[in-house]
Every structure is written in structure tokens, then in C-alpha cells.
Image 1: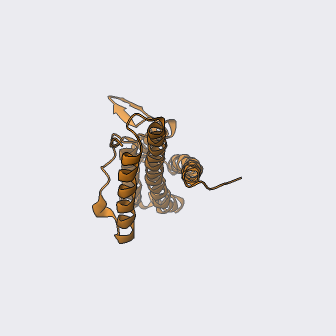
Image 2: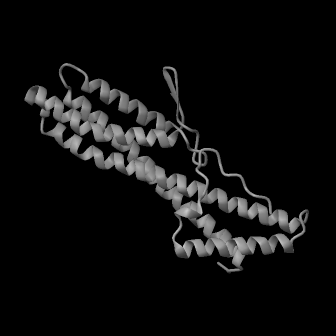
Image 3: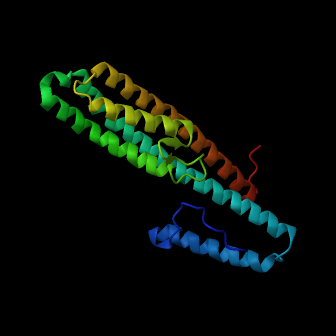
Length: 210
């Protein structure tokens, strides 16, 4: 069988990252692949069908991996939002410059988490349009654009001479809402991805799901 090309933006798979049992399974797969190469003529329909099925499984793997990484990044933002929102509720702006520094300190983990998320979004291949900054504009999936825009609005609000707590709370809650919606969508999409992969695997093994 021909060697399948790794998708753009994905690191090549390495056997060095596998544990003993997983590596043994990979070696078994390599033996099966070699046996199939010998058994199926290069130009046969059966070989084309097998290539199509294996390509579909590979694409589902890449999609699941991508969605898992996005899921983790979205969760990190939501976790980081809690201390920032709590400091806003306490009215840290009343404490002068020290209060502002507290807000900035609690914002920094969110800022880092959003930056990591958008870096991942710039490399997506299987889950939508990649995130791009083009001059003054930004492109990508709507939720990516919304996250980037809310990050910019919050940072602008934090630079104001007098911090508007109500505005920052509204913006923070909007950021959380976007992340929660996408997290829920990512959960459902990941489950469906795994269901499809399982169904294909069952068909290969001749398992009757009826």
C-alpha cells in the first residue's frame, strides 16, 4: 500500500512516543499491512477500497486529536476566568493601583490560555477554517474570531484610567459563554467522531451492530 502523507500542520507520528503494548500493536499493524500488500494486487478494487477505509480512519484520528487539543485549551480558559471574575466581584478597582495590578495579575493566565488556544486554531486542518490575523482584520471560524475580539476588548478595558467593573464582567461572561458553547459543541463532535471510527472498525472486523 502507498504511504499516506501526514496532514499539514500535524507533527509526524513517532513510535518513540508509544509505550510497550502500544508499540507492539503498531508492529502487528505493520505486519498486517505487509501481508495485505502481498495479498492484494496493486490495481485491484479491493486494494482501492482498503486504502479508502484506512484514509477515513486516519482522517477521523486527526480530527479527534485536533478536537481534543481544542477541548483542553477551551477548558483552560474557563478555569482561568474564575479568579479574574472573583476579583471583579470584590471590586478590586476601589483599591487604587494595587487593585489594578491584582486584576492584571488575574488576567494574565486568561491571556496566556487564549493565546495558546488561538495558536492551536491557526493550525487546524480537520475542524474548520484556521484562525488568521490579516493586518487589522482576523479570519477563521466565528467562535475563534469572537474569542480574539473579546480578548482585545478586555485588554483595552484594563488599560483605561478608571476600570469599568461592570463592562469587564460583561466581557468576561461573554468570553466564558463563547468557550462554553464551543466546548459543548466540541464534546458532541468528538463523540460522533469516535462513533464513526468505531463503526468502521466494527465493519472491518465483521461485527454486526444491528
